[in-house]
Image (tube, rainbow, N blue to C red):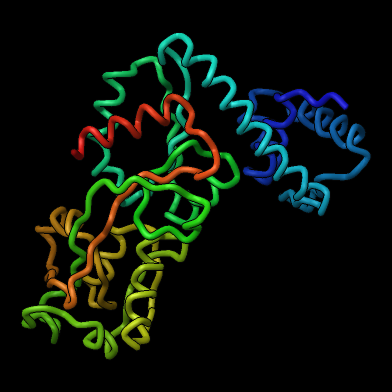
Length: 294
């Protein structure tokens, strides 16, 4: 059985877009050509891999197994390419980098240094929540990722701590808690709480720490956008917890920020697969990050 790498890429593009038309556009090919490519693939496999249902595409059981293997194969192919590129001294190559949206402005200086040192490396950025970064690493879709600790898959992922910031309670002006010197978990119990989406590492940390002290948060809203979260707090729809760097960007808002008691920190790190060697571009980023935080 001979399946071209390009066919695997086309298949995964369909899986990600869930639409043949959008997949064809992303692959720069006509839809009939893309359809024929998938038909040939299914003929070679002897199994139906995809089900076209109205305007969406679903995976069969065989398709789910094929997707997992395709991601592994493409991941190894990418690593092979980067290993060969490394023979030229990192003058060319590609880095598949995961980034949590809340961290984007904080890592820009490091990425600027990386770009200046390795101008030939193409940076492919993928925005995920912390859990999404972990899943993408484990499926070999990323080389390395910026996220917050702790990770969910601790035994399968290695990490390099970078820096940490205080986590602050975020309240609207005039809130009953606004005059407190600091905020305890128990103080939140009487108010609606606005939390990040479930795939955010910070959401998992907040849930873990609150439950550890026996506090059940009254979660009223979830969002993946810190600015929307802050706007909802400002509109008196609830209270929240934000990292200090985000709070500093909201100084013109009608918000009050208070330290937590006990103190909490947002611990940023680079993470990668424990049992898989880093690609040369990823290793270069890790080395640069270590040097910049010594």
